[in-house]
Length: 141
Image 1 (spheres, rainbow, N blue to C red):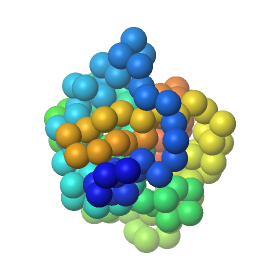
Image 2 (cartoon, rainbow, N blue to C red):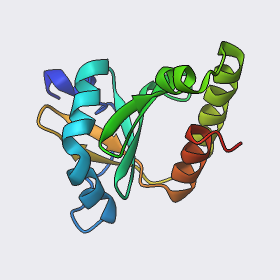
Image 3 (cartoon, rainbow, N blue to C red):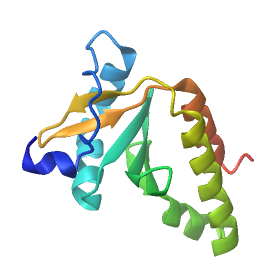
């Protein structure tokens, strides 16, 4: 395991993300943004890829984690969403709890790893997790 692997989420042994998996193409398209998030947070990350977007759990979900996402070529995070939408700490805590529950429900979903320029990231190409994360981010609860 390389020095940067601990920052990029290579703690678990998952199989590599196969190039034939649609998630590989989705990851490739957003890899510079994903690497930027990993560089910024310096903790393990787990990516839920989508067409034209990526949703990134940072830290150690479901216990202690943060959430970033890439949409429309921009990197965003929960605090930014709270600031933009005027969401207070109590509501933000509820949103975080919804994300935590969605992550827990997805624990049995297949996970893979993808190589980045500096290490590995965990990839979870789960449609159900993707759907739940989008609901939270769009405040559609």
